[in-house]
Length: 116
Length: 112
Image 1 (tube, helix red, strand yellow):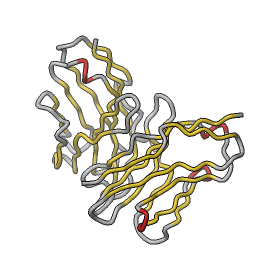
Image 2: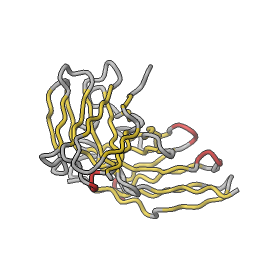
Image 3: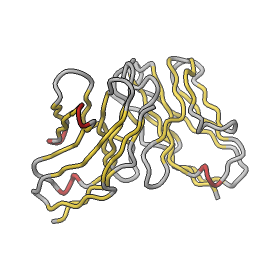
């Protein structure tokens, strides 16, 4: 069974500051890991994914995440926050063949607030 | 590229009524997934199809829920005898094989 823990249901940063959203996972098989963003009343948009290979992955809108197997973590970062980054962020994991053969398991989400 | 579409976007119904939602995936995607998202929570997996075959169902999917994908294209999710606890956002996603899932905008169900 897989699970995802996102530390902090709300994170507030100032515009221009570093964004760090934490995600830890558990998986009995090598995981595939994802970060999705959700704006109010909309579906989820993929920010980035880790499958195999390079552990530092870059995504859209300047976000990146690093897969650390020893820490079972996949934290999301962005060097400089923008007002448009305010949204709900979800970390998700799948296992086995990884693309979602058995559905994604999501964390509870982190609401990112950007202070002007 | 039309993306994943879902209809209706909003549905308000009275307890005990049946409701049906539709999902149209990205045209070349062979896998289709349904998730449920309640307020303040992440999406929870309900079921998925590969082409027309329903290959997995979560224990969250009670007997009142049924999903179909008759020709391996669009899918419907029906909830019979709705309960207030069914109020949620129902999300559909599609993928090409094992690749990443693309989500639709969701159908928000309110059961009065």
